Length: 265
Ligand SMILES: C[S@@+](CC[C@H](N)C(=O)[O-])C[C@H]1O[C@@H](n2cnc3c(N)ncnc32)[C@H](O)[C@@H]1O
Image (cartoon, rainbow, N blue to C red; front, side, top):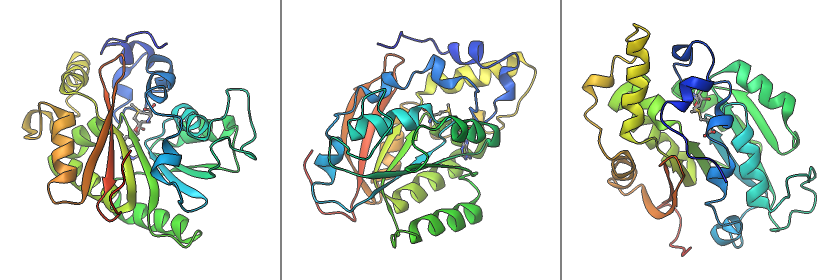
């Protein structure tokens, strides 16, 4: 089980210059927030429950994948593959999943590709998801290879704070609106507000004020609640459930697009 981590753990393990990770692009992220701490909260049979007669392959999008450790752990967990199993040929849960993982940091993506145990099923790409033109071109091209216009499931794990700090309230809303338009289900692990304060404090210690938006953010406080409001208030998505919280106090929220018919978990 993952050891509880403090807010300050990120900068301790992120290298000599914590401010050098302005997008949360920490090179050792999975060492201080281990994938197991998140995936163990998810039912192993989740894909079967969400997509009992679903399309094949299922298409997943992991936004802000860092160097891919969590992407691989999600892939294994959701397909019922053991740690040492490298072949998805006969997935235990009877599903085939193609996972597209993207991150703004090319060095992290290069490492993810180099270390990937599932190069046929998990693809990595350097992409700034806040670049609307590049994002649309790239994701549409990927989906069109499968004659699809949406991903079956999106993963947005510990990314919302970095989008919010770097792009402000409007950026966060635009990001979530885009994800809700492109993902039939969306699993989000929002950073709580105390992480924002810690990130801003780190920069102040370095004498930098890169997060210009921090003091003016009107979306603040209970970030899980605020993100739920943004995703649900115009009826685009509904909250299906919260799978609980990690030992470092981040909840895992599953949303469903209202484009889909009602399903019970
Ligand atoms: C804190 S890490 C989380 C990594 C992984 N999702 C996890 O939970 O283990 C946040 C990641 O989001 C990425 N990121 C931040 N802004 C981004 C953007 N605009 N486009 C793509 N990736 C972004 C960072 O580079 C970083 O790798």
